[in-house]
Image 1 (tube, rainbow, N blue to C red):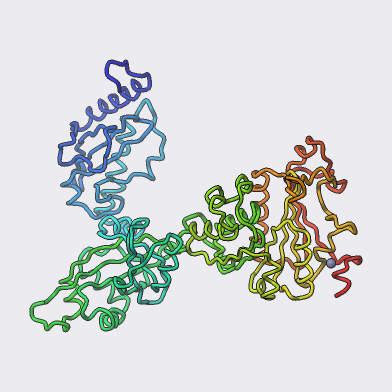
Image 2: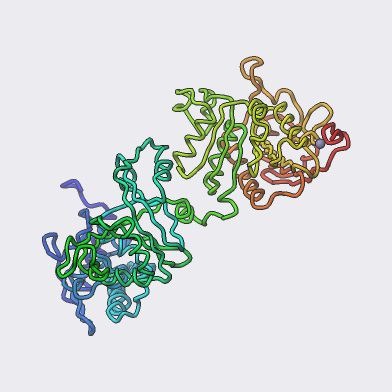
Length: 590
Ligand SMILES: [Zn+2]
């Protein structure tokens, strides 16, 4: 605060609360202010917005000296409780007390602070710390919490950080620690199955790996949850329990001359596997044994263990953290997207975030200035005249390097001329191209059996009044052509036909359909939900889903809704099975 200025009302309020709380506690416990030069002052209080009190609490099991760090916005922000150095060294390790001596009362302080009794509230917090955390910890009543907090304990003491692409499984494996050229994320090392895997993951960021520094590592899955090992012999027992033949074989094959071993392990906890590891600096010589003849348990006792913090960047972990895990049924699906304009590009981006990781992107155009407003990509790509397919591929793989993406800067029909079966290995082919003759040709090829993957046509109607999703079953029901009137109009359009609607930009070059980016994104979300449903379980027939946009806006612009949709409401979705049409030239000529 600036000197000479009067205190603000809120500052006065906080000062009063803090002083009232102190008075209350002072009347019941020995209390003194703990200054920064005190050896017990908590190390991780980084700024000046705390006042710290040292307080002694009688406790039968172990008398305690706490440090209470009170924030200068108390009681709107809550105090933190720490143990003194001596108490910490007497008591640790116990669950919920970290190496900063912080006593984590987090679950309990959800209780709202009563502003008039803030001193009493701090006292309650102290009681919780004493009874629920310290005493239970000392009596080992909550020892299983140590397993829950395993990684927190492990990482606190870790000397290295390593990225990992390993999704820990049930089989013992030989892994590699690959070194790369510059710091990326938090490390220069990545734990992988192969150098190729590391290379592929790092390539979108143009980071090279250094093959000459690659080290082998042993991965051992444990059957049951464990608590953090304390002594070296605990590490040995862990290996022994998991089958020490794995380690013997590893040392024989990869480590007999190495002075370091890298050992990783995992154990099951709450439906997933916890992954951790250490670097073992082996003794040069153990008295009484010939080099190379030291029994494993003796070697372990004479080694130095350095914990490694693993930062998992494997797909399974990322998507589990992001909410729900990847559905196994989606993870290995492959999508082709024809058309990487604003709609196709936005679909690709959204679908990649569901965990689908195989894409084929096709577009014959390059990014232009006029695309920027609605497209996933912007001036960067337009400035470099990047092709739309390559620009989108780059967006996907720099966001998620696990994605396997192929791109073609080409006309889809040209591509099919050269390689008729190009689309046939994909679970679904999304057509977001807004070009009727190409759409019709793809439909014909599907009906002729040259394209065997189902097609999903997606497009928006003018001003986003509707979005259409037409799924064509490769064999059953009607086709794209079945949905067209004799004059070529789409039979189920929401906008009543009106030439004005299809504004031609700059003369007769291209038909530009007006709709805002928000309307498009709204439709993309609806479409993605549909696509996910289709990928889980393909429809058994040709089917049209129509999403209605903002009908009122459309009418207010002076346009009309087709009679068929007149009574329906904005933002509703309608489903219609498309039967074979007796007048369809394609279906009838098969
Ligand atoms: Zn047809």
